[in-house]
Image 1 (cartoon, rainbow, N blue to C red):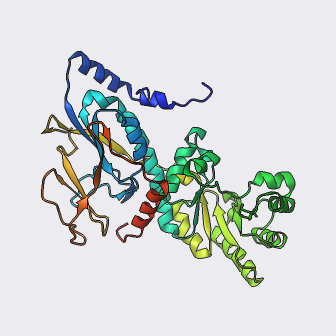
Image 2 (spheres, rainbow, N blue to C red):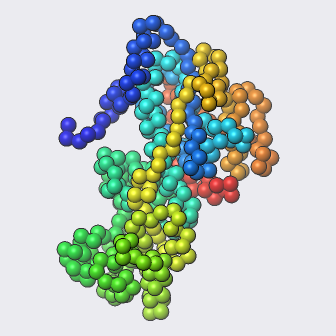
Image 3 (tube, rainbow, N blue to C red):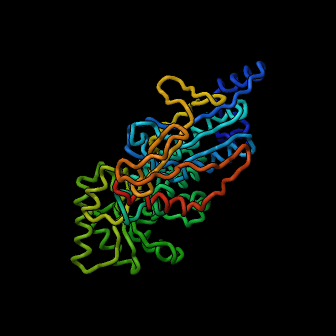
Length: 390
């Protein structure tokens, strides 16, 4: 093998699991122990007040053909780690003979932990940025085998476009990017701008990189003079030379306006973090190319725990045992978790009757799940971001 990755068959066969699950199955088989086990996935992660649940379609594909019942939140649901009463919110449950699915705990968690982390970070940027452009530039910082996954969940979380060819292809989109410093270094700044304009298809946005050699504002003016249909400039100024980045943006915008040059967006990139965004927006940034901050986002620290065996509530210490019903207020996004069969609760924030938050995706091995369009998942995330509770 040329690359150190697991292929689909190795994942499906359980080779990416932790070895102690294989040993558990070995013991259970030798002892002929078959228990109907209910497991739930929750997080007690405190780093954010809300997260985006993602990775569900891959979990369904992992468990397809297994005699289990899978229930979960709708993919793209924004949920708090704890409900209105401080109970951890289950995002997913798996039920069946434990021998049937024990080896999949490791990959289940791996699929949703990283996907949810990337989607959550992307959504946090989108919440800050609003209608301004958000571009995913982060695949170069991660293993290339992960490019489609990173771009998928960056897009689901709120990025408007992605840069990798395969990521965009899997999404059914056109990859978006500007130009690299390499082109300018090879051809020279002005020549690179001109050839980029002359040689590429008109559908490619004419966005000039203006920070390679000269002052950003003077390069912007020159690029606008050379490229008649210039749609934007990108500032990727290294932090060691940046000074006050917001002030650079103001200078560029001023110089364009004072010359009557309209319709040129200022796109900023280069180590952009959440805390940078408000000041850069106030300065006039029209779009953000965000790379490592999204692609290397902290995973959502989910845990998968047994909460019931053969109908009897049981869980390790620190966990809440028993089968649960999960409800959400469709008006404000508030959650409530109650023991199964308890009366449907009211939302403590707005008084509304709450609705079931979970759906059955696999029932006793029968797959009921029909994958939604990726744009529908993304639109669902964007709609939830408009709620005041988020």
